[in-house]
Image 1 (spheres, rainbow, N blue to C red):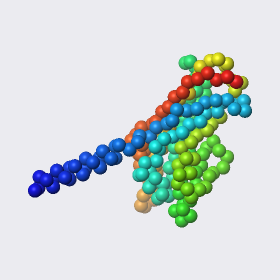
Image 2 (image 1 turned 30 degrees about the horizontal axis):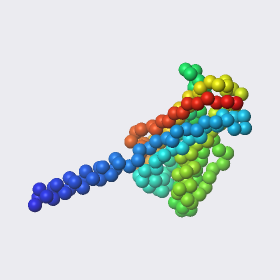
Image 3 (image 1 turned 135 degrees about the vertical axis):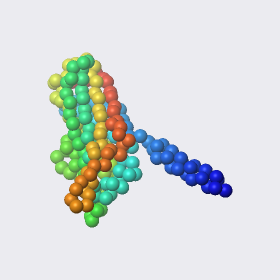
Image 4 (image 1 turned 180 degrees about the vertical axis):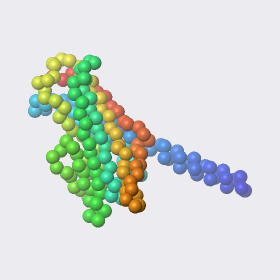
Length: 181
């Protein structure tokens, strides 16, 4: 009987371990790059970036920030690098999210969790003027996303950091293409 109880406990631990690690890993969709209004525009979407633990942390009122890095190359030549960040903080009293995107002029406030996740996960950025593009040359765009360490206020005024809740992985994505101004 004790062996059966021990076996069932081990099975329960193993199944919760498998459920934890079977969640979809954080990743980036293939980036989109194009020319609009004489500017090279890049669009990126983060997938599966909000595991349950991170969402609970946001609901506690803790600020969470995602940093996106864009690197544009033509052959071996570095053309441009850009970084943007998206932050969210939840006002527990108002039950409202405030999303700040460094590439946008104003903050977005919403009570809708899906809208908050969408705003945090989607990055559109003007990377450079179209006249700087050499016609008929192939360009490579690499994008990386990173969940920044999270600061939690501790008792007695101290702070401690929670390492990233993305299993220490920085999702990356790449696209190649010929841009025509």
